[in-house]
Amino acid sequence: MADTDQRTKKYRGNCHCGAFVFEFEAPEIKSGVICNCSICYKKGYFAITPGVELKVVKDEGTITQYQFGEKKWKHQFCSKCGTATFGTSDFFDPPMNMGINARCIQNLDIWSLQEQHVDSTNLPPPYTPHLHPGPPPSPSNIPSDKGKLYHLTCHCGAVTASLKVDHPFDSKEYTGTIAECNCSHCIRGGYIWSYPTATQLSLSGAQNLTWYTFNNKIIRKGTCKHCGVLLLAEPVPIVDGEEPISDEMKTFRESFKDIRPVNLRAVNQDELDVEDLRAKGRVRQVRRDGGEGGVYINP
Image (cartoon, rainbow, N blue to C red; front, side):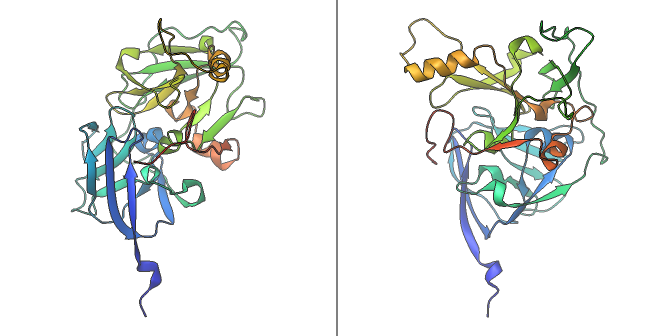
């Protein structure tokens, strides 16, 4: 009798904006790898290596490539929506050289899968985190000699920031929200959100951000155009002549006007370990249907 565990299923995946769609067949996905190397950590990969070829169903040319260090890995992400899709390495022969970000796979409940954590922080080459070159924030509600200052950066260092909070995120004194959302966009990056005010954040290199909006287009999310790491979100600037929005959306935008949601994966790992926060139950899981402002339809 055939081993039923080896029966294959057909999977379909895509970046969030739908510009890149792929399919493959593999045994049922029951687990994935969470690696804490500098790039996997910042991009929130939930990696699988099925050892099969991808069939590209749709490709609008938005997939771009990022390499660093010895350039043995080619990390692919969508330049429009920031979704990390897959990567290939020079260490293995095809198709075993391809790792797929399972977060892109349609109708796959990532939170129900087994997590296999891999410690890769000491593997060469060493990664030196970047520091914010600009002045630190000085929020009026936190005394200058109090609070905790964090440094945030994309992987390549083109975008950096510093963030000041009243208490360290991993302390019992911190009472603010730290959340992991499973909406259609957030789940693809494994983003871990905190919600400081604009005055708590100082940003440098904003010209290197690609801003992505979807559905109601009230909030936009900023991803480094070079390495694909998402750092923050902010309300979409109001422009003259914009289309009218509902009162509900006006209230939502008003509530967010002074808030700058930050992806804590962008905080340098030597200052904060978000996987440790997740393991200790300090990150609240928020289940949402579809995505921000509406139901997401898989392409």
